[in-house]
Each structure stands twice: as structure tokens, then as C-alpha cells.
Image 1 (cartoon, rainbow, N blue to C red):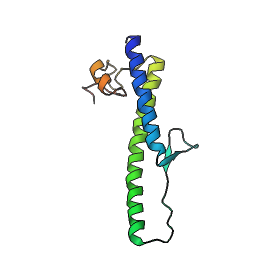
Image 2 (cartoon, rainbow, N blue to C red):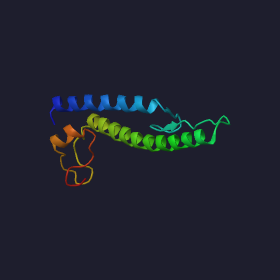
Image 3 (cartoon, rainbow, N blue to C red):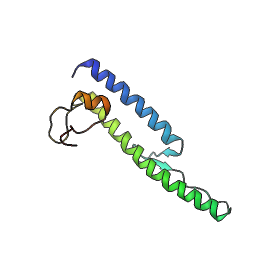
Image 4 (cartoon, rainbow, N blue to C red):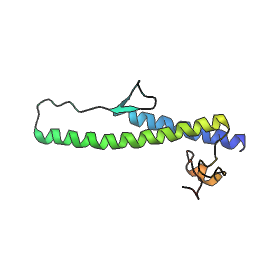
Length: 117
């Protein structure tokens, strides 16, 4: 792949990584024990109304699902950035054939080609 295309993809990936980390940082904290792991803050109940506590528990559940999704996206972005460094970016992990530039432009962290996805 051409250096210019790789440079553009790297910039896109790094920008998306910053965006995801900001979003995660708004409701979760990075853990030091496991690389790439975040922990959503558990609501602290202060003896308030049951309805308020139920709302907080529901929101916590929603944030946990969002955390997992964002962590997965972040993992794929970091993997793509590592592949750029190693010179293996844009190669399908299943069939080992090149992933189309059109697919990579739309989804820079793609791990699989259109046929294997």
C-alpha cells in the first residue's frame, strides 16, 4: 500500500481512538490491571427514592453495554494501528488476501475482506 494512503488511514484511526477514549472517559475509568480495559462507575446509593435508584441501575446497565462496545472498537483500532507499524495493514485475517481500499476508507479498522466478513 502507498505511504500516503497508510498515513491517511493512520490519522483517521488516531482521531477515532481519541474520540472513543473521550467518550469512555465521560463515564468510565481506565484500569491499570488490564491494558485497554475500562470500568464503568457503579452508582452510589444514598438512601434516596426507589425510583431514582432503579433509574441509576438501568443507566449503569446501559453504560456497561456501551463500555463493552467502545472497548471492542478501541481494540480493533489499536490492532489496525499496530498492523500499520508492522506492514500488515489491509490484509484479511481469514483468507490473507488484501482488503479493498474502498472498504478500508469506510471502515479503517476492518480486519476482514468483504467476502470473509
